[in-house]
Length: 483
Ligand SMILES: Cc1cc2nc3c(=O)[nH]c(=O)nc-3n(C[C@H](O)[C@H](O)[C@H](O)COP(=O)(O)OP(=O)(O)OC[C@H]3O[C@@H](n4cnc5c(N)ncnc54)[C@H](O)[C@@H]3O)c2cc1C
Image (cartoon, rainbow, N blue to C red):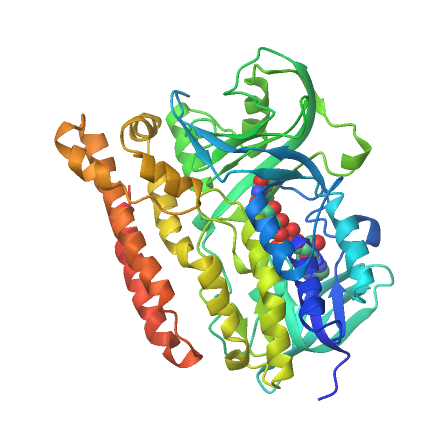
C-alpha cells in the first residue's frame, strides 16, 4: 500500500521528537517522517494548557545514552542547571539516601526549540495544531491517524507504514486501539499519581540543606505532606526552584480522613512551599524562558511499562507506554532510552517489509534489556512504600538500608535488603517487623520478576504463557501488600 509517510509520530513532546530523530538517524534520513502535535509551533510539546508540567530533572547517564547512540546532544539553554544527584529525606529528615548521580535540570519550554532545530536539519516534517482522535486501520493493521485541525476545524487524515504513539499518558490512540493486540489500553487509577509544581524564584531564607540545596534535587518522603508520593525541591539556580509534589488519590483520601482535612493537590503544594524556610518571599518565575510554564498540575504513571509495546503497524513510547519509573515517576530517562532505541527497530521492520506485531517485536526486548527489566520489581516496592506510616519510613531508612542497598537504589535498581533478615531478632515494634518482612518479600519478588523479564519471549508466540506467569507473580505480590 502506498502511504503518505513511512513513519508518523503522534505527539511532538520529548519522546516523540527523539523518536523521530532516531528514525532519521538509523535510516540515514531516507525514510519520510511526520511528527504531529496539537500545539502550534511556538509551544510544541506542551503537555497541557498550563505548560510542560514536569519536575524537569534527568540523569546525565540517560542523556549520554542518547548522545552516544544517535548523536543528539543538548546544552544551554535547554539544560538550565547541573546537579550532583537526588537526595531523598525521611519524614523526620534524619536520614537521606542519594540517588542517580550527576544530572541536569532541563528547561522544558526551551527544549522543544532545540529539538525542532535538530529535526529540521534531519529533514523531519512537522504538522502543528492537529488534535488526533483515532488510528486508521486496514486488515487488522494500523495504517495511519485521523483528527481535526485546530485552526480550520477540517478533518485531518494521514497514512504511514508505522505509527509511533508518543502522545503522553492519556493517549487517545492507545485507549481506542481497536485491532487484535497484546497492548493494555487502560491504566488502573491507583497506578497514577496526581502531581503538580511551580517554577519559582525566591530570596535567601534560613540556609538548610534539607530544604534547598543548589547542588542536589531534594525529595521529601512524608505521608502527611505527599501521601503515597513525595514532595520535591529541585534547584534551577541559587534562587530558583522547581517545587511540587505527587500523591496517590487513594492515599490522599486516607490522609485527609486521618487528619480531618479536605486538601487537594494544589493546596498541598502551596502548604509545602510555605513550610520551606530556605525560600523567603517565593514567587512564580518571571524569567522569559518560563513565560508559559510556571505552574500547573498533571498526572504521571508509576507502574511497569505496558506489558506489550507493539501491535501491527503501531509502537508505544514514553508516557503513552507508561514508562516513568515506578519508584520516583522519573519518565524522562526511560523516554530517552526507548525513543533512542525505537528508531532502529522501526527502520529494521520497514527495511525487511514486516511492520506486523512480529516484525516490531524486537522493540519489546531491546527496551527490556536496557531499562524495562527492573520496572515490575520497582512497582512492587512502590506499592509497599505507599502503605507505610511516617514512623515506619523513618525507622526503615535509618535501620534497614545497608551500603549495598543504598548503592542499588542510587543506580535505580531494587535493593535486596540482605541485612534485614539478619537483623530480624533486634527489630523493635510489630509494625517495623512487618516492614522488614515486606522489604524481604519485595526483594524476593523483584528477583523473580527481573528473571522473568529477561525471559521475555523472542517472538509473539510465547507471549500468552509469559504474560500469564507475570500476572501470577504480580497478583501474589499485590495480595501480600494490601494494607
Ligand atoms: C508534575 C510532574 C513532574 C515530573 N517530574 C519529572 C522529573 O523531574 N523527572 C522525570 O524524569 N520525569 C518527570 N515527570 C515525567 C515526565 O514529565 C514525562 O515522563 C515526560 O514528559 C514524558 O514525555 P512524553 O513525550 O512521553 O509525553 P508528553 O511530554 O506528555 O508529550 C506528549 C505530547 O503529545 C501531545 N499530544 C497529546 N495528545 C495529543 C493528541 N490527541 N493529538 C496531538 N498531540 C497530542 C501533547 O500535547 C505533547 O506535546 C514528571 C511528570 C509530572 C506530571
